[in-house]
Image 1 (cartoon, rainbow, N blue to C red):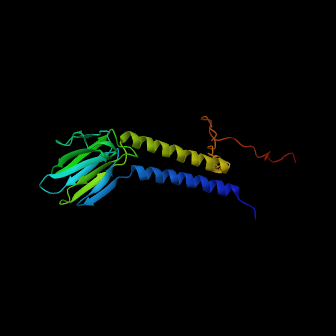
Image 2 (cartoon, rainbow, N blue to C red; image 1 turned 30 degrees about the vertical axis):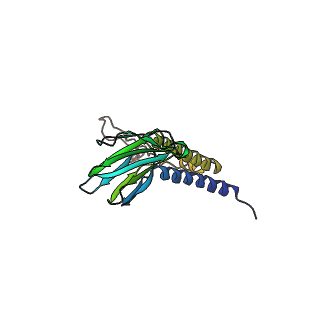
Image 3 (cartoon, rainbow, N blue to C red; image 1 turned 180 degrees about the horizontal axis):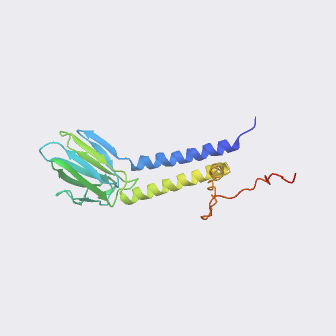
Length: 206
């Protein structure tokens, strides 16, 4: 059985392109949470929390380790730096704040890494609706650029493996010729052309 290497290489490039799409979508798509007693990991992107009640809700941002993190927000009372609690390996960094009624948005910086994440913990008595962005604006832009570059390379590789047949097909597409107008002779005001039909005179010599 003859192996079709062109088909295999094309399929492999398609898989790489699709993997780049799913990888970017997983990082760029927001995560949503809804309900009471919500706990989730805060990433480097912004977090939007909707408090549908008419009362403030107590929330905490906590992580293990001694390195402090900062919280920034346009909402009053949700801006500051975490404080350390405990000693040694069991120490934690804690930032407690009040979520007012309505929509609040905040961002955690200086410490949100893959191995050391900040956890959001809310009061178990109130239902909240949360939207978490995995990345900040700069990281999202870099992720999109990397995905587009990988997809572009995969598409070029597919075209090269297939000897750029699609390009040759486009270049060989026939173009309908433009018919030139038939020139019309002008009499320049001389009237109709005199035509000769031979000598039609009668011989009267007899």
